[in-house]
Image (cartoon, rainbow, N blue to C red; front, top):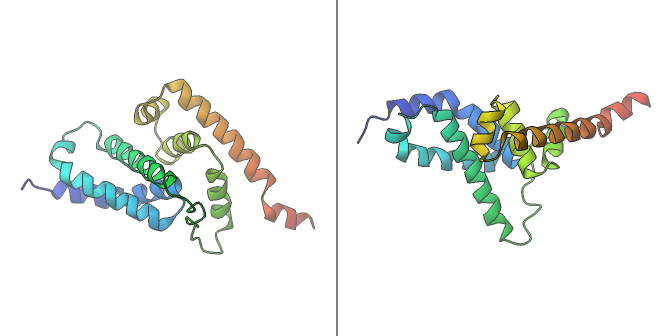
Length: 165
């Protein structure tokens, strides 16, 4: 079997970022871990070919986004499971919970664009290539998403209402 030391190094260096990305996409730490594990299993099997690519990160991001899209498609075929994905966040992380709820309100394309642009730090062109859309679509989805997030996070912050009382 081919040497997989590079795979181990990659996983050690990128696992936390992959998990954060999956968490933002899924809204659940357990689902995120499952998604990352699924992607890493596939990556391990393909590693001898993947490690020679120009951008392993881009390939793995695409795998992660595609795995989540597949998960959502499978979920749509099931009924009565809309409320199963409760976010497990500690009570002292109100800002994180507010952000997660705001992200959930975005359309899936907007959420993916925001995650890739602002969590991964990809350029517009890299995001467009990862999502298989045009650069203009990435720009408009990101802009619309950021406006919506700004509106949601400035108008629904319960702490701001407490401070005025």
